[in-house]
Image (cartoon, rainbow, N blue to C red; front, top):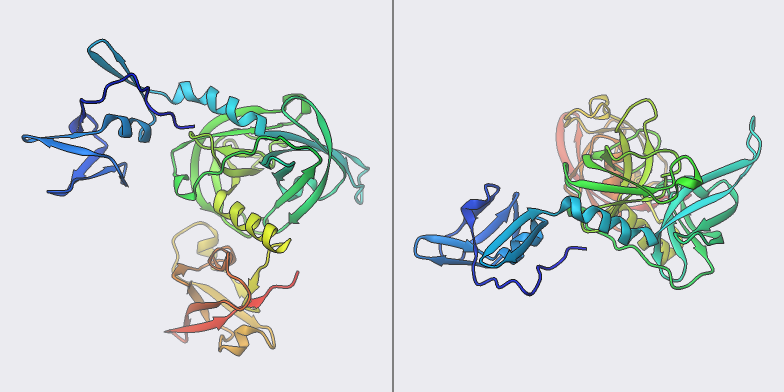
Length: 378
């Protein structure tokens, strides 16, 4: 989605570095450019005592419009201009999902709706597991209004992700972004089907409000917090960055608050999809122990107490490699651990039989244990 500067502009001139207060230069012979704290590969030149930087490369990083008019170069912020283009580009990849729900105790069979995003042109669509898990019939409605019966191909309730399939080719897969681009304060766009099917492909814009959020008892991995307006029906729809790339799947909103919404981040999505396509399911590992979480960490406050082991399963890898009741696990493979979500994140991506380095405190003393992981049976 990031556009190159028009070729008609002659960039023999360079933009003087001090024009941009958020850009710094360091180094004497080979100058390095850092933009908002991130090192960038931008060409520089020194003429006399003045340092210049390539305006074409810099404008793309800062999301600027640059145009030339006679003897002047005009620079402007293109965020407002690019948002409609992003929505237009991503919309063919976003689908509405509607289906009959199973009757549950105390309720009759009904209708439910949600959102999905195309990930393969041959008809595969990513959504939340909670959108489709109880549907007896699933119908996908494309952006052009055409509808197709769908079936669940893969589902993982713990990660709240599912892939559904329709018999249709020639769809428009969305592009995935990078986890490194999920930064507090950056603009994000949500597209989905809020409240009613007539609102299909509604768009809302906001910012990323927080990272590494936990919702105890609901999600086993950490989430993105945003203030992008979402409502029931947005679940399963994409959270998109300013390059038009999916960086998350909108999953849950706080009904008794405003601007407090959560999305599954792209690194978790890619982890789950990778396992779907390799194994047909998500393979998880376990230490074979139960834990008592640090209340301070659960409240979102800084903590270094660790995760207390309260029981060890007989025959588990925890028992085999020397983990004991009342140990405090505070670090796994270099990642701090204070809650079960922290532990899940640290173990995410590891497979049964992999070795993991666990740092513990036992009776006030710190030590390290190498454990060969067991497979978690579903």
